[in-house]
Amino acid sequence: MKLVLAPMEGVVDFKMRELLTDLGGFDLCVTEFIRVVDLTFPRRVFTRYCPELLNGGFTRAGTPVRIQLLGQVPHALAANARKAVKLGSHGVDLNFGCPAKTVNKSRGGAVLLKEPEQIYQIIKAVREAVPAEHEVSAKIRLGFDDDANSTEIVDAVEQAGASSLAIHARTKRDGYKPPAYWEKIPPLLSRLSIPVVANGEIWQVKDAMRCQEQSQCQDLMLGRGALATPDLAAKIKAHVTDTPYTPLNWENVVHHILHSSMHQDENMSEKYFSARTKQWLSYLKRQYAGAHVLFDEIKTLKSKGDVIKVLEKYAISPDLDSNHNSKILLK
Ligand SMILES: Cc1cc2nc3c(=O)[nH]c(=O)nc-3n(C[C@H](O)[C@H](O)[C@H](O)COP(=O)(O)O)c2cc1C
Image 1 (cartoon, rainbow, N blue to C red):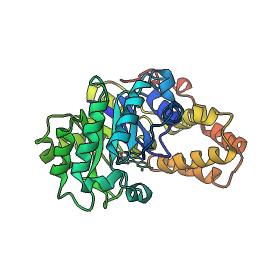
Image 2 (tube, protein in one colour):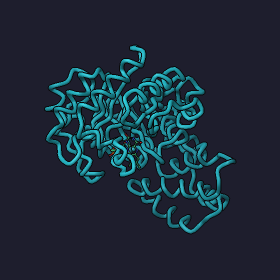
Image 3 (cartoon, rainbow, N blue to C red):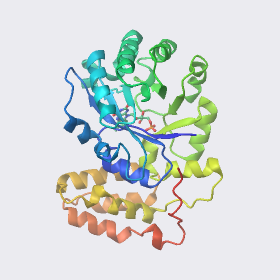
Image 4 (tube, protein in one colour):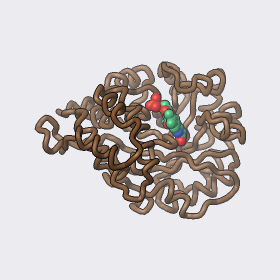
């Protein structure tokens, strides 16, 4: 089983990838999308989205990172893809699932699901531009308004030469509304010979097991679930390998937040710092009662120092907490 950390624009940046992969369990991360119109970006754009390029394309924990591109012009995507792998990205991922209006208006993201032929042209151009030893993966939804042309979409992905495919098991119209239709993946799998990664609504270990069973995919991609439970990937891997693992408790999670580079960054503005903390807590609230208490305590605070004081009050290092064996970092 492989676990992929989902791309999440504005949420899963370099610092979040560092923290989540430090906790173990992930085999690959995909960056937030870089939107390509017609230019080939300079190096600094790639390193801004993916600072891991300066570390051989790996997070601090050694997890490979893949740059995601979004756009509609095959030759422009191809040129940027070639550059991304040259700079050290572990393959390239192509986004055909983003529902954002601004992106869709310029024929990028999910709107391309209506045009399998264009998906084919994009992947083919990128595949031809990127040396064969690098994966070219695609990320799709089941369709735009409905899943009527999902078979055409996946056929286009495979025939164009993609190395693997991640399927967010919802349409663009479904947005992020539960459920995810994992059971719609097997009929698509039967048409494909490339590996498929199932994605959507995996919040707990038991969801991962159900998703594997219903989608018939070994490999899974975790998005919001990994923000709500930062050691979800490690828990899933421990479960499938039958390895003892003590999950992080709330106090350990707060410790990790406090000591993450997200919170240790001296240059981060006060406003950004408290916005990011509140954003993450809104995901954590789903799994930890303590996150509600902490959120209420910091919600009106603006100063970084004040937020840190509250975090310090709740944080307990897993190393000091005999209940947690933080040394188990499952790969
Ligand atoms: C805030 C947010 C940002 C996202 N950004 C991206 C993105 O940049 N590229 C992409 O392919 N998908 C993006 N997605 C979709 C996720 O990668 C994932 O497919 C989706 O959240 C479903 O998985 P989940 O239920 O595990 O969260 C985003 C989702 C959210 C909620």
